[in-house]
Length: 154
Image (cartoon, rainbow, N blue to C red; front, side):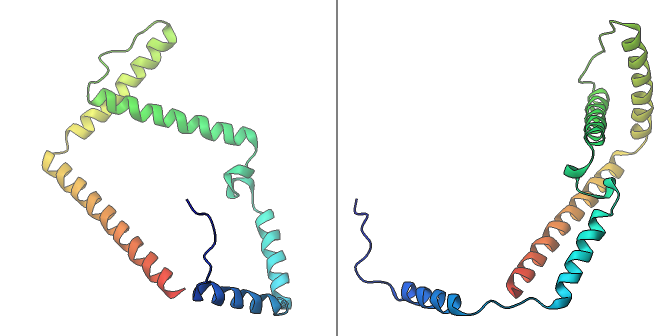
């Protein structure tokens, strides 16, 4: 395998070097005076935001931990609800009174949700799923079109 550079530089390489040399020779341009004021004003505005309106990485550790715990609990609740609705989990293992009480409350809530969802006719579910799929497809299409338009104008 030959790792040597080609003997004759390509025209694109020469052009690129010439452009690079020309751009490096140009003096730096100073930013407008108003830009510095606007940048510092925006930095101060963002720093003055309350913690819950800032980036998640800037939240206090306790708030981040609580948010993750609540998110995990909601995810587990959703999985268990759908598992209960589909009868994937035959029954909870009740080892302590607390687990038995929570299981009873869970079964009551899940049963109520199953009754509510069971009253919706299958044709209505078909329409709901079709509308959601159409909206999702339209969102992807509009996003792709916007991306192509914005990328093309740059």
